[in-house]
Amino acid sequence: MSSVQTGGFRILKNRQALPTSVIAAIQRVDVENEINVPTMFSFKLNIVSAVGAWQDVNLDIFKPGDEVAVFLGIDELTQLVNGEITAIEPHFSAYSTATIRGFDRMYWLKFGTRTRTYQKLSDSAIVAEVARNAGLSVKLSGNTGVINDYVLQNNLTDYDFLMLRCAQINYELLMDGTTLVFRPSAEGASPQRTLNFPLDASDVQLAMRVPTLGKQVTVTGYDVASNKVLTALTSSGTAQDKMGGKETGYELTQNFPDSSVRYERPNISTPEALQKVSAAQYQRNLGQFIEGSTSVLGDPNLVAGANVKLTGLSQRFNGIYYVTSSTHSFDLDEGYRTELKLRRTGI
Image (cartoon, helix red, strand yellow):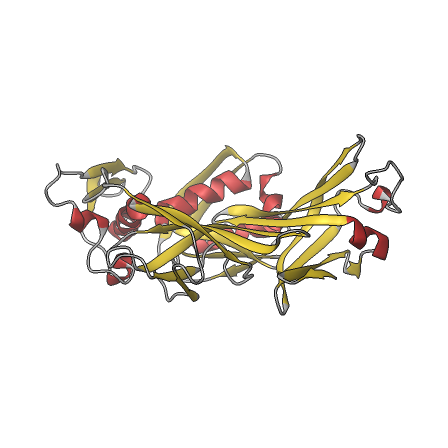
């Protein structure tokens, strides 16, 4: 493990420690995670010194498919990703370097396109079947509660297909080690940590924008058996949508024009499924109300899908924020930092 005053790292390859010479050559480690996106890791090595002497680094010890686990931390190291090498990028020059990159196993869902049909299955059951076919173990959280009469995966990668399923009911995918997790959006849940400005976060950038779509959401479907058009309507959310504030983005914009939207889902044939989709789209459309970013001393617990509470700002902007992505970076000169992208649906 290399370490400086503000953190350290450990990297395992195929569950074994790297050679000492390789560890000594590592200058930077990055782990980038984002909601519904495979987590990427990279580490950069110096393979030739500034005076042109070759370092004792054998790049051939790395190959695509090698399992890599990356740990970062300040006082205690925490595993941030378990993935596989997908790219090796040497740069030969007066000061030669090499970057090793890879992704967690959500990346497996991106290989090849498929055409399949799913009949009389809930979205949880569909995700479980797709994951198993891709060689992934799966953990299902929440209860989608709706049986789909017929769902078609039409020449799509498993990843693109599951993104469509997630978008329709406001669920999300993430990895827990090597296990794919399918869960309801955790936006607005209890915060993982409180970040005070300027003590914990000295630079917080936020943008509040009036929502132009979705104050009322109507979704129409069609029941083949009764030959009738079905309709579901959502015009209010939950207390969780306020994210510790007093009102949602829609409630703040009462004086603006009506922002109602309508979606047609002719493949949905039950009122229960339509209502679930309608409520999910209402929440998704609120997601761009407040967006922002900040940077803090490295914290491996602050990952995409967690919530944080910001304090020390104005009363309007204090409250719970959802972490949509995080970049964890260890650099020999700067130590361990975590950059966060945030969003909020209420104030």
